[in-house]
Image (cartoon, rainbow, N blue to C red; front, top):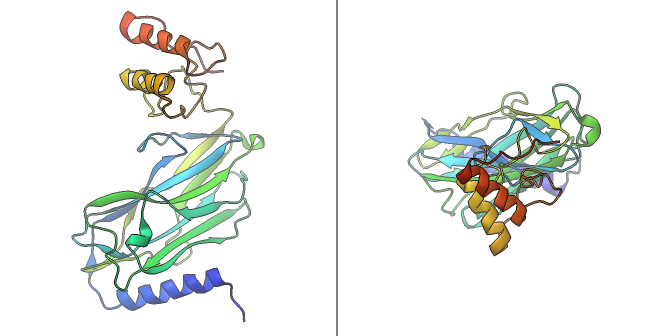
Length: 268
Protein backbone atom coordinates (compact mmCIF):
# COMPACT_ATOMS: atom_id res chain seq x y z
CA UNK A 1 0.00 0.00 0.00
CA UNK A 2 1.44 3.37 -0.99
CA UNK A 3 1.40 6.27 1.46
CA UNK A 4 2.05 9.94 0.83
CA UNK A 5 5.24 11.65 1.91
CA UNK A 6 3.34 13.70 4.51
CA UNK A 7 1.82 10.55 6.01
CA UNK A 8 5.23 8.88 6.07
CA UNK A 9 6.78 11.83 7.93
CA UNK A 10 3.88 11.89 10.35
CA UNK A 11 4.18 8.17 11.12
CA UNK A 12 7.95 8.46 11.44
CA UNK A 13 7.63 11.23 14.01
CA UNK A 14 5.09 9.16 15.98
CA UNK A 15 7.41 6.15 16.04
CA UNK A 16 10.35 8.22 17.21
CA UNK A 17 8.21 9.90 19.86
CA UNK A 18 7.01 6.51 21.14
CA UNK A 19 10.60 5.27 21.28
CA UNK A 20 11.65 8.21 23.44
CA UNK A 21 8.52 8.25 25.60
CA UNK A 22 8.21 4.56 26.51
CA UNK A 23 9.26 3.60 30.01
CA UNK A 24 9.46 7.16 31.34
CA UNK A 25 7.87 8.56 34.49
CA UNK A 26 5.13 11.15 34.28
CA UNK A 27 5.61 14.87 34.81
CA UNK A 28 3.43 17.98 34.82
CA UNK A 29 3.96 21.56 33.80
CA UNK A 30 2.89 22.18 30.20
CA UNK A 31 -0.12 23.69 28.48
CA UNK A 32 -1.59 24.37 25.05
CA UNK A 33 -4.02 27.26 24.68
CA UNK A 34 -5.66 29.56 22.18
CA UNK A 35 -3.53 32.71 22.41
CA UNK A 36 -5.69 34.91 20.16
CA UNK A 37 -7.51 34.97 16.83
CA UNK A 38 -6.77 36.98 13.70
CA UNK A 39 -4.67 40.07 14.42
CA UNK A 40 -6.25 40.90 17.76
CA UNK A 41 -4.16 41.48 20.86
CA UNK A 42 -2.65 38.35 22.47
CA UNK A 43 -4.97 37.08 25.18
CA UNK A 44 -8.11 38.62 23.65
CA UNK A 45 -10.52 35.91 22.56
CA UNK A 46 -13.95 37.28 21.60
CA UNK A 47 -17.10 35.17 21.55
CA UNK A 48 -17.68 35.88 17.87
CA UNK A 49 -15.91 35.82 14.49
CA UNK A 50 -16.61 37.93 11.43
CA UNK A 51 -18.21 36.29 8.41
CA UNK A 52 -16.48 36.61 5.06
CA UNK A 53 -13.06 37.39 6.55
CA UNK A 54 -10.07 35.09 7.17
CA UNK A 55 -10.18 33.41 10.57
CA UNK A 56 -6.79 32.56 12.08
CA UNK A 57 -6.40 30.58 15.31
CA UNK A 58 -3.04 31.31 16.97
CA UNK A 59 -2.26 28.37 19.27
CA UNK A 60 0.25 28.86 22.06
CA UNK A 61 2.37 26.40 24.05
CA UNK A 62 3.81 26.92 27.52
CA UNK A 63 6.50 24.87 29.27
CA UNK A 64 7.24 25.10 32.98
CA UNK A 65 8.09 21.44 33.54
CA UNK A 66 11.64 21.93 34.75
CA UNK A 67 13.35 20.96 31.50
CA UNK A 68 13.14 21.42 27.72
CA UNK A 69 10.35 19.72 25.78
CA UNK A 70 11.96 17.41 23.23
CA UNK A 71 8.79 16.06 21.62
CA UNK A 72 6.18 18.77 20.98
CA UNK A 73 2.80 17.72 19.62
CA UNK A 74 -0.65 19.20 19.13
CA UNK A 75 -3.88 17.67 17.78
CA UNK A 76 -6.86 19.88 16.93
CA UNK A 77 -10.18 19.79 15.16
CA UNK A 78 -12.35 22.54 13.70
CA UNK A 79 -16.04 21.73 13.90
CA UNK A 80 -19.52 23.22 14.31
CA UNK A 81 -22.14 22.13 16.88
CA UNK A 82 -24.99 23.43 14.71
CA UNK A 83 -24.11 22.66 11.11
CA UNK A 84 -21.93 25.57 10.00
CA UNK A 85 -19.53 25.05 7.13
CA UNK A 86 -16.20 26.78 6.46
CA UNK A 87 -13.42 26.92 3.94
CA UNK A 88 -10.90 24.04 4.06
CA UNK A 89 -8.33 24.69 6.76
CA UNK A 90 -4.66 25.51 6.32
CA UNK A 91 -2.44 24.43 9.24
CA UNK A 92 1.15 25.63 9.68
CA UNK A 93 3.85 26.10 12.30
CA UNK A 94 3.89 29.73 13.40
CA UNK A 95 6.74 32.03 12.42
CA UNK A 96 6.63 33.26 16.03
CA UNK A 97 8.28 29.99 17.08
CA UNK A 98 11.67 29.29 15.51
CA UNK A 99 11.00 25.55 15.65
CA UNK A 100 13.80 24.47 13.32
CA UNK A 101 16.33 25.81 15.81
CA UNK A 102 14.77 23.67 18.57
CA UNK A 103 13.93 20.34 16.91
CA UNK A 104 15.68 17.93 14.55
CA UNK A 105 12.80 17.09 12.24
CA UNK A 106 9.60 15.20 11.68
CA UNK A 107 7.62 18.43 11.84
CA UNK A 108 4.41 18.31 9.84
CA UNK A 109 1.02 19.99 9.66
CA UNK A 110 -1.21 17.00 8.91
CA UNK A 111 -4.88 17.37 8.01
CA UNK A 112 -7.72 14.84 7.90
CA UNK A 113 -11.02 15.40 6.06
CA UNK A 114 -10.14 19.05 5.48
CA UNK A 115 -13.22 19.83 3.42
CA UNK A 116 -14.94 22.51 5.50
CA UNK A 117 -17.68 20.42 7.11
CA UNK A 118 -18.10 17.86 9.88
CA UNK A 119 -14.65 18.12 11.47
CA UNK A 120 -11.31 19.16 9.97
CA UNK A 121 -8.35 17.84 11.93
CA UNK A 122 -4.79 19.20 12.05
CA UNK A 123 -1.92 17.32 13.70
CA UNK A 124 1.41 18.97 14.55
CA UNK A 125 4.46 16.93 15.46
CA UNK A 126 8.14 17.38 16.16
CA UNK A 127 10.88 15.09 17.43
CA UNK A 128 14.40 15.46 18.67
CA UNK A 129 17.64 13.53 18.81
CA UNK A 130 20.25 16.24 19.34
CA UNK A 131 18.26 19.50 19.28
CA UNK A 132 17.82 21.63 22.43
CA UNK A 133 14.02 21.39 22.41
CA UNK A 134 11.41 23.92 23.56
CA UNK A 135 12.96 25.72 26.56
CA UNK A 136 11.69 25.58 30.13
CA UNK A 137 9.80 28.64 31.46
CA UNK A 138 8.86 29.66 27.91
CA UNK A 139 5.54 30.45 26.23
CA UNK A 140 5.10 31.12 22.53
CA UNK A 141 2.60 30.80 19.68
CA UNK A 142 3.59 27.55 17.97
CA UNK A 143 0.84 26.84 15.44
CA UNK A 144 -1.76 28.59 13.30
CA UNK A 145 -4.89 27.17 11.72
CA UNK A 146 -6.59 29.34 9.10
CA UNK A 147 -10.06 29.14 7.58
CA UNK A 148 -13.01 31.40 6.71
CA UNK A 149 -16.76 31.26 7.40
CA UNK A 150 -19.01 32.86 4.82
CA UNK A 151 -21.97 35.23 5.23
CA UNK A 152 -24.46 32.40 4.72
CA UNK A 153 -23.37 30.92 8.09
CA UNK A 154 -24.22 33.99 10.22
CA UNK A 155 -25.78 32.96 13.54
CA UNK A 156 -24.12 29.53 13.61
CA UNK A 157 -21.01 28.55 15.56
CA UNK A 158 -17.52 27.37 14.74
CA UNK A 159 -15.30 25.73 17.38
CA UNK A 160 -11.76 24.51 17.89
CA UNK A 161 -10.91 21.70 20.30
CA UNK A 162 -8.37 19.01 21.13
CA UNK A 163 -8.81 15.53 19.65
CA UNK A 164 -6.42 13.71 21.95
CA UNK A 165 -9.22 11.51 23.35
CA UNK A 166 -11.98 11.48 20.75
CA UNK A 167 -9.71 9.88 18.17
CA UNK A 168 -7.79 7.80 20.70
CA UNK A 169 -4.53 9.62 20.05
CA UNK A 170 -2.03 9.96 22.89
CA UNK A 171 -1.09 13.60 23.33
CA UNK A 172 2.18 13.32 25.21
CA UNK A 173 5.17 15.59 25.17
CA UNK A 174 8.59 14.41 26.24
CA UNK A 175 10.80 16.53 28.45
CA UNK A 176 14.06 15.80 30.20
CA UNK A 177 12.27 14.14 33.12
CA UNK A 178 9.72 11.93 31.37
CA UNK A 179 6.26 12.06 29.86
CA UNK A 180 4.36 15.34 29.96
CA UNK A 181 0.63 15.56 29.26
CA UNK A 182 -0.11 19.24 28.58
CA UNK A 183 -3.33 20.85 29.69
CA UNK A 184 -5.71 22.36 27.13
CA UNK A 185 -7.99 25.35 27.66
CA UNK A 186 -10.64 24.48 25.07
CA UNK A 187 -13.03 23.97 23.52
CA UNK A 188 -13.33 27.51 22.18
CA UNK A 189 -16.53 28.33 20.28
CA UNK A 190 -17.43 31.46 18.29
CA UNK A 191 -20.72 32.76 16.91
CA UNK A 192 -20.50 33.90 13.29
CA UNK A 193 -21.40 37.60 13.13
CA UNK A 194 -21.98 39.96 10.19
CA UNK A 195 -19.08 42.26 11.10
CA UNK A 196 -16.37 42.80 13.71
CA UNK A 197 -17.90 45.90 15.30
CA UNK A 198 -19.65 45.10 18.57
CA UNK A 199 -21.80 47.55 20.55
CA UNK A 200 -20.19 51.00 20.78
CA UNK A 201 -17.22 51.80 18.55
CA UNK A 202 -13.87 52.55 20.10
CA UNK A 203 -11.95 49.32 20.71
CA UNK A 204 -9.32 50.55 18.25
CA UNK A 205 -6.51 48.19 19.27
CA UNK A 206 -8.71 45.09 19.56
CA UNK A 207 -7.95 44.20 23.16
CA UNK A 208 -11.58 43.72 24.14
CA UNK A 209 -11.86 46.84 26.30
CA UNK A 210 -13.83 50.04 25.69
CA UNK A 211 -12.09 53.23 24.56
CA UNK A 212 -9.10 54.09 26.71
CA UNK A 213 -5.58 55.54 26.55
CA UNK A 214 -4.23 52.41 24.85
CA UNK A 215 -6.69 52.90 21.99
CA UNK A 216 -5.61 56.54 21.77
CA UNK A 217 -1.94 55.54 21.60
CA UNK A 218 -2.75 52.95 18.92
CA UNK A 219 -4.59 55.56 16.86
CA UNK A 220 -1.77 58.12 17.15
CA UNK A 221 0.74 55.48 16.10
CA UNK A 222 -1.39 54.54 13.10
CA UNK A 223 -2.00 58.09 11.89
CA UNK A 224 1.41 59.67 12.47
CA UNK A 225 3.85 56.74 12.41
CA UNK A 226 2.25 54.32 9.90
CA UNK A 227 1.60 51.88 12.75
CA UNK A 228 -0.45 48.69 12.44
CA UNK A 229 -3.89 48.75 10.86
CA UNK A 230 -6.73 48.52 13.44
CA UNK A 231 -7.99 44.93 13.69
CA UNK A 232 -11.55 46.15 13.01
CA UNK A 233 -11.90 49.18 10.73
CA UNK A 234 -15.40 49.99 12.02
CA UNK A 235 -14.20 50.14 15.64
CA UNK A 236 -11.67 52.79 14.57
CA UNK A 237 -14.34 54.90 12.82
CA UNK A 238 -15.45 56.43 16.11
CA UNK A 239 -17.41 59.32 14.63
CA UNK A 240 -19.19 57.12 12.09
CA UNK A 241 -18.30 59.20 9.03
CA UNK A 242 -17.29 56.15 6.99
CA UNK A 243 -13.55 56.93 7.22
CA UNK A 244 -11.55 54.79 9.62
CA UNK A 245 -8.60 55.86 11.80
CA UNK A 246 -8.15 59.49 10.74
CA UNK A 247 -7.73 62.87 12.45
CA UNK A 248 -11.49 63.19 12.93
CA UNK A 249 -11.57 59.91 14.86
CA UNK A 250 -8.53 60.95 16.90
CA UNK A 251 -10.16 64.24 17.88
CA UNK A 252 -13.37 62.40 18.74
CA UNK A 253 -11.51 59.93 20.97
CA UNK A 254 -9.51 62.65 22.76
CA UNK A 255 -12.74 64.52 23.42
CA UNK A 256 -14.34 61.38 24.87
CA UNK A 257 -11.42 60.40 27.11
CA UNK A 258 -10.33 63.82 28.40
CA UNK A 259 -13.31 66.18 27.93
CA UNK A 260 -16.30 63.94 28.76
CA UNK A 261 -17.40 63.98 25.14
CA UNK A 262 -19.74 61.41 23.63
CA UNK A 263 -18.61 57.78 23.24
CA UNK A 264 -18.11 56.24 19.83
CA UNK A 265 -21.25 55.88 17.75
CA UNK A 266 -23.11 52.60 17.73
CA UNK A 267 -21.99 49.78 15.46
CA UNK A 268 -24.21 49.13 12.43
